[in-house]
Amino acid sequence: MASLALEMYRSLPRHVAGRALGSRMPAGVSGRLTPLRLVTRDEPVGRRPGWARLRTRLSGICGSDLGALSGSTSLYFSALVSMPFVPGHEVVADLLDDCEDLPAGTRVVVDPVLTCAARGIEPCDACAAGRTNQCERITVGHLRPGLQTGFCADTGGGWGQRFEAHRSQLHPVPDALPDEQAVLIEPIACAVHTALRARVPVNARVLVSGAGPVGLLTTLALRELTPVGEITVVAKHGHQRELALVCGASEVVRPAEVLRRVRRATSAFQVEPEFGSPYLLGGVDVAVDAVGSRASVETALHATRAGGRVVLAGMPAPADFSAAWFRELEVTGSYASAQREEHAGGRGAFDLARELAGGEAVQALARGVVRYPLHRWREALDHAGGAGGLGTVKVAFDPRSN
Image 1 (spheres, one colour):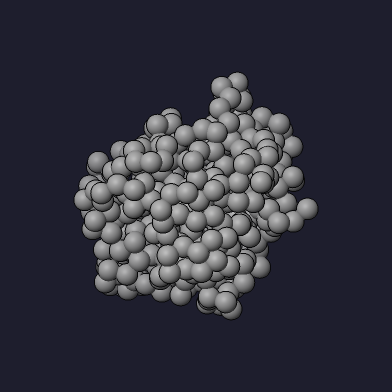
Image 2 (image 1 turned 45 degrees about the horizontal axis):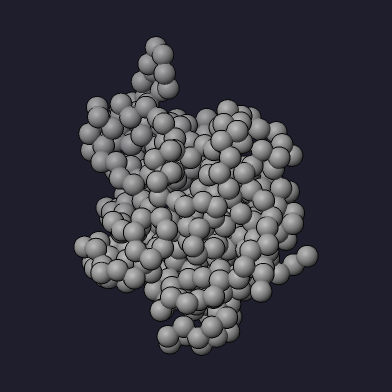
């Protein structure tokens, strides 16, 4: 039996064109240059022990998906994927098979990281310790290379009607939780990991650079899970400012106002290089880059006090890291989420994320989830690329719709 899926394939001309145009690519053109196609694929058969077939209900479009499709993602990741693959790692789906203790028909969300357990091999040190997002074996085992579901040729992904996942990846969804909230659980889990990686001191002042889904959910996780004091969120658009406050921001500022507001709040000094961006001597205790652009990364670096901590939650673009050296900043990455979070008493990020997903803040965010059928994928990608300015929180594919 066959099913429909969106498949990313290798195309050097389209990769080069997309990389050259980048953010300058006009709406309507991106779909024609994207190495993506709607195909009919054989359904997965679920032959491997511990694996099961799933039917997608909703699957979000993430910034990392847009980066891969536009060619803007670093070539560092080229060895960690296998093509052609079906994207889609933010997924809520129905189990089509019994999977160990989960019966067929169970609605689940998927932890996309393909760990040693999913690959059928002995756990590496990271997996054994529950730091599954740091797995060292993501290119071996009985699967082709793939850092996550949605980047591996063998598993399929949420941008298709059917895909496969391992029991270790599956988390049942409470019956009362609508799909629009459930599809946010995976990005919430990533935000939980980011908030815990930030190791926020008691009553610390934190800056979140960016108010897309990553920034909004990180703000929520910081407020709910850490002893943070003031949270300043950088937002471009009006609806983002409103949602940031709902998620726990103390204040919301425009990008052009960041340094001035932080300077006043922390009694820092602002200096102006002859060539280059201004920065502070002093500033916030912790900053989170939630976008990954050069401007957002440098905002986080330039607004953090000496000896402070900067967390890179967005896939970072090349930026000037002089501040990290000169101000002795502690810069750390935050990738995906862990099955046992180091600063959460050993609880997993998905367990915490499922609890947060039922709250009022996520209910408000879920009202900004917009669905598209697979055949309208060009329109969906254009919408996702401009979601911030359009008042949309998350664009998602619904492969069941026509």
